[in-house]
Each structure stands twice: as C-alpha cells, then as structure tokens.
Length: 306
Length: 255
Image (tube, rainbow over all chains, first blue to last red; front, side, top):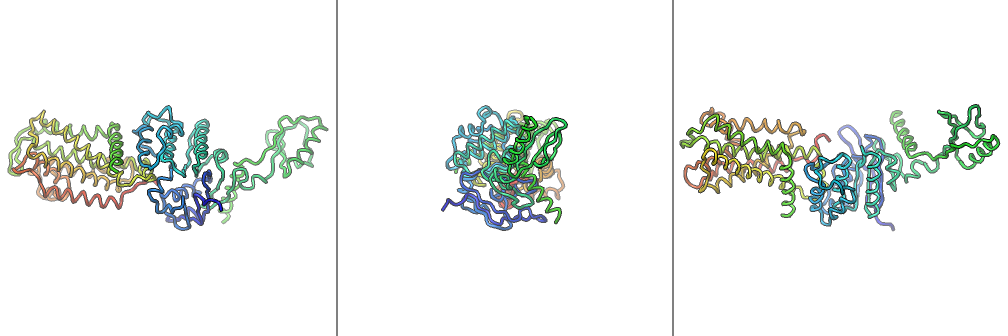
C-alpha cells in the first residue's frame, strides 16, 4: 500500500446564500507533490483552498488534510500547514526579519530566520521595513512567513500575480526547492506556464467542478491531441491537398496531424521535389494554454446551453 | 506562553511606535488638550463635589481619562481594524498562535501606551501648572489606570466588530467617545451640566474612569480608591471582553 494522501477530498460542496460555489470536487494530493489548481475567476478555486486551509466551513463532502478535518483545526495541525493568502497580508511597519522572528516563535520547530530569508530570496531587503518593499518583494515576505514554521504542506493562492517574468522565475525556484525538501504544495494560479513549470498534477476547476485533471503533459488529452505542423511557402506555391493543409494567417500553412511522423514524411518528399527548404518548419504539440482554453470553453458552452 | 505574549507585545508596541499617525494622534492630542484647557479656562480654583481645587488639578485627571480612552479604545480599535482589513489577522489565524495571545498582545500594548501617556501628561501637569501628583493615593491612581485601560481595550476589541472598513474606523470610534467626553465632565465640569446628561454619563464607562482618577488626584481623604467607579469599569471591561470573544472577526469584511 502507498502512503495515505496528504489531502483527500471527496464530493466537496459549498453553498453560499444563493450560489453553489463548489459542486462536488474530488482531490488527491500525495506527499511532496505539487498540485496546481487552475480555473477562471469564480470557478471555486479560493473557496476550495480556504476550506482546505480551515478558514471556511463546507456544506458537504469529506475532507482530510494531513489526516485531520480542517473544519476543526488543532494547534498541532496549524503548525504543519503554511498559508499564503491571495492578497498580501503583512504588518507593514515591521522588517521581514522582525516579522519572521515573530512568526518563528509561533511554531514548535521553526526554520532559522536566516534560512527562511534565503529560501524566499530576501537577503538584500531583510532589514528594510515591509511597507518600503515592492509588491513582488512583499509577496516574497508572505512566502517566507508561510515556510518559517517548517510546514509539511503549503498553500499558495496566486503567489506570483503581478510579478514581472524574472521575479516569477525566482519564485518558481523557491517552490522547486521547497518541493525538493519534501514539502507538499497546493497552488492556484492564472499562469499556465507556472502550472507547467511547477506542477506534478493539475486540476482544472470551472463552475465549481473539476473539469479535467492530470499531469501537465497529459492534461485534457494533450499527449494524444493532434500536432500542428506549420511552415511558410513562397508566393504562388501551395501545399498538396493530400496532406490536409489548412492555410493560416500571415502566409503560414498549417497541417494538423494525428500521426505527425507520417505527415512529415509526405511533406518532406513533396518539398524535395519542389526544391523547397521549409526553413521555418515547426512541429508543435498543443500548448497547455490551448488545452485549458478548450476545457474552459467547453464548460462555459455547457453552462450557457443549460 | 509568557515568552509568546511578551514577543507579541513587543512586536505590537514596535508597530505602534513606527506609525507616526497613531503616535501623533494618541500622544499629541491629550498634551495639546491639557495646554489648551489651562490656557483657555485658566488655572483658577474650581469647586468639585464640595472640594475646592485649582483648574489644572481638575483637568489633569480628565485628560488622563481621555488619554486612556484614546490609547486603549480608539488606537486599539483603529489599528486592529487596519490589521484585519489588510489580512494580518487572517494570516495570524492560520498559525498555531492561540487567539488569546494575539489579543493579550494588543491589550498589553494599549495598557503600556496608556501608562506611558499618563506619565507624560502627569509630569507636564506638575511641571507646567504645579499640579500635585498623587503620593498617598498613588496605588489608587495606578489601579485606575490599569483597570481603565484594560476595560477600554476590551471595548476597543469589541467595537471592531461593528466597523466595516479601515476608512470608517476613526470616525466611528470618535463618534462614540466625543459625546462621552462632553457629558462626563472632561471638557465641561459635571456641576455645569444638566443632571439628565450626568445621569446618562454615569451609565457609560468614561465618567467612572474620570471620577476614579479625580478621586486619586484630589482625594477627599483616605486612600483615594473609588471602588464603585472601578466596579462599573470592570463590569464594562468583562462584559466587553466576553462579547468580543463571540463577535470578533478575523477576516477582512470585504471578503
């Protein structure tokens, strides 16, 4: 038997006064795994996460987080869970080092403050008052506070929203290092490349339900979907119709292939005969974004259709 | 646990001290009132409850009551609402920190700020206006200071539940205390107020705080303990704390 999952959710529902925010969600997260929860605004991501964090009650279903029901969080349980809320939540007049020292005192076995500073990449700004830090740096203080207690499980609710690309890369490095240290991580994000870079498993929520789950490579049948072969041709030349070519904008020809190798062989033979080099030839799998938008689009279509 | 409370208290004091607006508002206002009162109304002798005392000796306990209310009630409530709306309380709730330690830090900060402010106001009163500071009745003054600031801190925690946003915290708390200052004898001696207003003021906690402080500064004899007033303050504090424990909100109102 494998170890029990860190998070196990079955049939989770949450009903607010007039809306069903979560309508029957199942989740399993294994130890030292990174789960990314994707979905449009209003999909139920934050509601689900906050139920798992112990902030919100649920209307129905079973939830186990680190072997306990988060609806009745014990002190020992809180000591094992780190939380980064969706918006920055810091005492702005303290410095990162002071805030981390304060938080470290809350936990039975904290990380040394220096280590938390280093993990979050705050070495240069550790003694500056938090209100003088940039938004991205403040967000890193949020992350440092979540990991100073040496948690087994960390929730990151949109940790890099508003980051510039290089800051996002550094945040990813922090998450990757935490994962190497054996921390289980649940993150929500709007950035598909973030999910792709960090997640072992992805769950897509829409309308309060799981509409797809899987590894980043296989989500929504991405590993089996058609490949796109694209190239441009000189003026006046058209690809043979036998390959199923579809003209695309900006002078590109695009082929959609179930069996890319066979299609490429046909294309290569034809190009040789025509004495064409196809210098910009590109074979591409569907991106995570394309798969995601298709999944979300299907869900919205279903809801609109009733 | 004591170390935990001490660290929380230390951090809260530090945050208070680094917020120029709250320091200015809490410390400068009572000092300004003291100087203004004596300048406007003079230091002439006043009759209070059959005793004759000079003006400053009347005003200093009043300003002390105002200082305690300001430090413990307004300042605490405004800062707790700000922390709540910025998610600081919600975040703290996710840690193993017991909620009461968090509260103890805030209440302890309120008491220490009130004590510090009381020292400043008393010393200024003595140096500038020759107010005689309590000696035999010092224990009564200190007990009043601690009971009063603890009670107002509890009420400050309670009132946060009725404040919807950061912006509305200062007006709402001021609307509560300003009329009480007027009817409790702090701005205008109770002898000059309609008895109906004084009766109303007796129900609320500002007047018992002022009366107890006045009894310590201008004793009619004895040790200066105003047990009846202290009992009313304690009742307000305990009631406020019990109710606050039920209605206190840790998450931002906008959520």
